[in-house]
Image 1 (cartoon, helix red, strand yellow):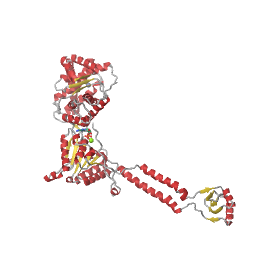
Image 2 (tube, helix red, strand yellow):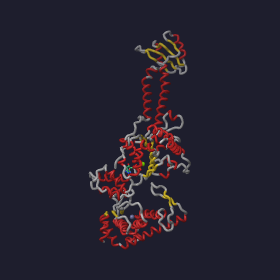
Image 3 (cartoon, rainbow, N blue to C red):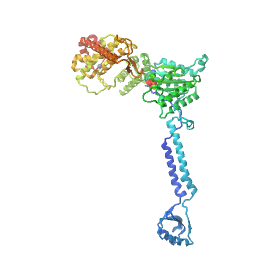
Image 4 (cartoon, rainbow, N blue to C red):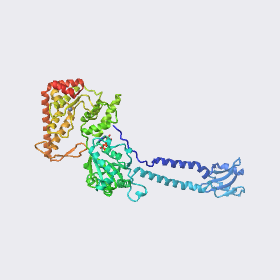
Length: 627
Ligand code: ADP
Ligand code: MG
Ligand code: ZN
């Protein structure tokens, strides 16, 4: 699989972490302390005992004395034995200190002052101890707030917005083709979507071609489709092809903690886009902000509603002839606010559906370009086996195949690698050391052959291509693979009934061979699928006499799983349940009858499978026809 490189961003001023500024401030303070305070701000003052003071007075070593009445300290200037002058300080003077001092006052050699300043430079001291800290405080505060704004990237309502650059939308801007590295050639099997988007690109290249005729381009194009079908990839391809500035932002990036910030981001995004026109604005996963507003439930969501309102307002506000085209992608179109889809907003909807057979071949080939594959790899066979797979899953299959080749020390990817990775994606990896008793293995063989035989004995069933009893990490102890030869879009009632019978075939074989008391839990997945199909036949496909073409269920989300909710009365629901049971029961009986009739073949095939562990569709058919 090809890694889509993250496009380069426009360089932004480097952000330094908060701790950096703290460290700078700390170092500055420490330097000041170490350098200035002892020498410049304060003189070195020696503390000496009172007795030494007296001795120095006696020795005429004291020249100036000051008394601090409050702290009862004596500060004096004296000279030591070497004749060096210094500042001295003694502790509290004793009770007779007053007497001593009055005596000192009479000494003509000693100057008696009120205060001996120990600070060398009072003005500098004042600056350093009062002004500098305040200055540092303000500086740190400023840096801090700048940093916070950058971090949050959010907006604040009101005038502060402009002054402090609040409310910047941190949309990534891709400018040149080289920056996304994705072109339309990288997107396979989505020809309609590509055509629609190509028109947009063309308009941005040659707007006059359209304006001459008087044609207006849609303002917004909404890409809808199941996950993994290439919506984001398509948008990147548009960016790669358009050669105009491309703003890309995810819907969830508008969701902010504070009310009004998301709206400010929307404003900013459109302001930037307006300045850079012609350009494209892409909002991925737009359902994050575009959800219906009147959902009731747990109170309103003011922030989201404001953001959406702002988006709607901006979409009305800009003029598409200026060349700003809005792209958006979602896999939940039904949850979007209808206002978003109204003409003049996202007026064009591009469906990005699951790929069909041809599409799958094309996607496999696109991803196969980037790995070394054997010349004889049959992509079509892989595509047939992967009905319903999305582009992302197919990309994954190719990559898994390549990984398997590497594990086995080969230089190219073979068909077997790809087939194995299809199975890995469908059923999980092989569980090499799973412990399975011989009895269980035998039962699983009969179960799987039961499925295969019922499928083969009915018309309107997809041919069996593989049966295996190698356990998988998904928990399956074996499985039967059926692959349609061509592309299937519709299924007839007969096919559905047969499919349910095939699903019940595994359990039917267990019953027939091992007796009703020895049936196992191995059929749980079959049961689930059979029930789902039977129910859908009744509630959604209108395939019963009784309910005719009445929709009894509504599908909640067309792209994310097929969960549906019943839309009928309780009595109808009970009747539906009865019919589901009848349908599955009938299919089960049919499977049981078929297997009973062909019990010899069942034994023979199950024995063969038990021995081989995996048999191909051809082997299976050969044995079936000869037996
Ligand atoms: P979405 O946004 O629809 O959920 P993405 O665009 O993110 O899906 O697709 C995920 C990946 O799947 C892509 O990066 C690409 O590798 C692969 N892929 C999906 N669809 C296609 C496609 N049509 N052609 C080629 N690759 C595809
Ligand atoms: Mg996506
Ligand atoms: Zn089964």
